Image (tube, rainbow, N blue to C red; front, top):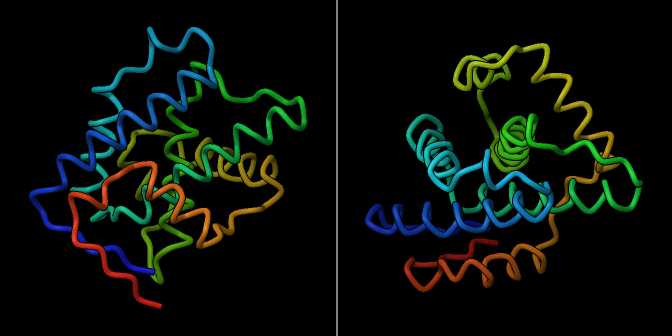
Length: 163
């Protein structure tokens, strides 16, 4: 499935995605509103748009993966996400999304350098994320479309579904 978008709608996408991700993180991590800002999430998304040509599909998949991670914490009563690692969990969500969506993606070392984190910590975080979600990274088309509807981004975009 492919969603095509005009460049002028990119800033609106970033704004809507920033608000969505901010809401998810603030709800999941008590007391994080003082440490996580809308601006830091927007900067994160802008960097990914610039450096890896982030696509809206990848943002939606990353959002679903992040929500799944949070849900699994509750189900398993294992609370990993906190104010000190929220950024890393966000990075991992987007990296996994890119790996799931693209045929070719940058190596982990690229992202470690891009976000100035240790490659060891990044690799351990990816492994931990996948273990917590039971390696369940598949996003059903229906789930994707529901998330797309919630973003209401498609009103600003030309939507093309390729199956």
